[in-house]
Length: 453
Ligand SMILES: *[C@@H]1O[C@H](CO)[C@@H](O)[C@H](O)[C@H]1NC(C)=O
Ligand SMILES: *[C@@H]1O[C@H](CO)[C@@H](O)[C@H](O)[C@H]1NC(C)=O
Ligand SMILES: *[C@@H]1O[C@H](CO)[C@@H](O)[C@H](O)[C@H]1NC(C)=O
Ligand SMILES: *[C@@H]1O[C@H](CO)[C@@H](O)[C@H](O)[C@H]1NC(C)=O
Ligand SMILES: *[C@@H]1O[C@H](CO)[C@@H](O)[C@H](O)[C@H]1NC(C)=O
Image 1 (tube, protein in one colour):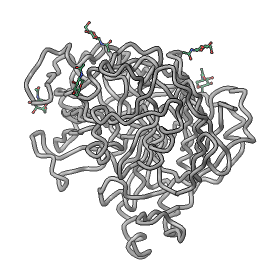
Image 2 (cartoon, helix red, strand yellow):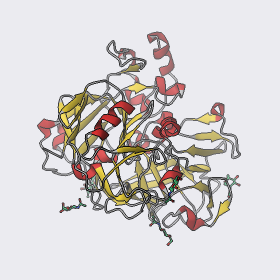
Image 3 (tube, protein in one colour):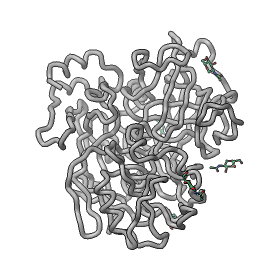
Image 4 (cartoon, protein in one colour):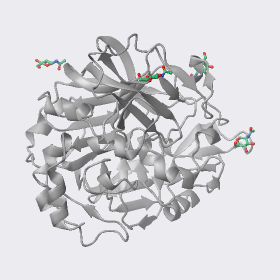
């Protein structure tokens, strides 16, 4: 896109985008961009200060791990386009043995208008919603089924009063990458989390859902950018893009309401003990070596064929240097989304094949799961993604899901999946092995390794 158009578009940009908007005129299209991919690196507006990283956040909350019905989720919108290529329909997973020692979904607790509510934590989508007591659970064909089939935790015990409703009437409609569908009216709620209250946050009380829950969380907290919000004018069935209305999602509101500086950091633990999210700073002393921090540009690129994402931030997207696996390495450049709402890592097919071949015995692709499987006692290769010259190892414990067994073959699923033509994703399997700083103010992603070989 030519510069002129880019600067022009900015005048209409809202909310979080305004934090980086001032810098957009400096944005440039990289000359060494991967083939076929255009992206931009805007300069952030908030200058780097190391004090951010020496002063722990006063707005910290715990993350909890859960085991869901499906075990792995490619829930985030990030997965929408890739889903049909890699055949991660929600259904393939249903017959994978469900007992899993590891949390494969991560959630956190908020007070929603004062009511305690557990929400899934999703850096790959932007809408925040919860189910009200009267919600309707549907199956994949749209037939009404008992509420328990959606497997939510305690629903939110209220409705939007007429004064809380967004006017003119709006509704949310979102279809996640794995086929789940959530819809309901949009309104305003006070959300208390991490030692602060976000006033009048636009939210959805999802009165109709097709959902694979974990019996604990009652909704989802979307932490990506405004360009990925899914509100539409009217209350009806019309989710036409021309009716879409962008709004300020939770983290944007948090910053715009002056609660915290424009960054947050996440350290999730593979154990269901969970981990921490720190708003506006870092978790308390992590014992990590901050000199090992890899700083990457947060890039703007149109990964999901929505024109708006070509010039506004959408996902938390980076371009890693490459990968090491076994004795080999691969340095082709592709954008990856950092996504807490997706369990596995989704890589370009050739690379996923090559890494799978490095397991002993080598992992084979089972199309009905869209994943690679190997013997449950296989030896996993050493795998690392290289970020700004620093290797981020993935603990071999995370590379084989020893409790996710295909009943036909008795093989276990691995954590490296093929992402088809993209988008590619660094999911929970990666995030479990790093402290990840989403430095929106400076338009950087920062990573500190937590795993060493
Ligand atoms: C909550 O925030 C206040 C300041 O806004 C701070 O004094 C207090 O220490 C914080 N509490 C925690 C648990 O961080
Ligand atoms: C598991 O699901 C796949 C895909 O739906 C199906 O082909 C396969 O037969 C199922 N296996 C068992 C043991 O039910
Ligand atoms: C959900 O809410 C919308 C908007 O208020 C309403 O039109 C619709 O009938 C509701 N659906 C159900 C199943 O309650
Ligand atoms: C949720 O509870 C239902 C009913 O008790 C149970 O059948 C289902 O397996 C549970 N799901 C999970 C993910 O624990
Ligand atoms: C969970 O954490 C504890 C303490 O860090 C560790 O000993 C244990 O092996 C972990 N369990 C798994 C399944 O990773």
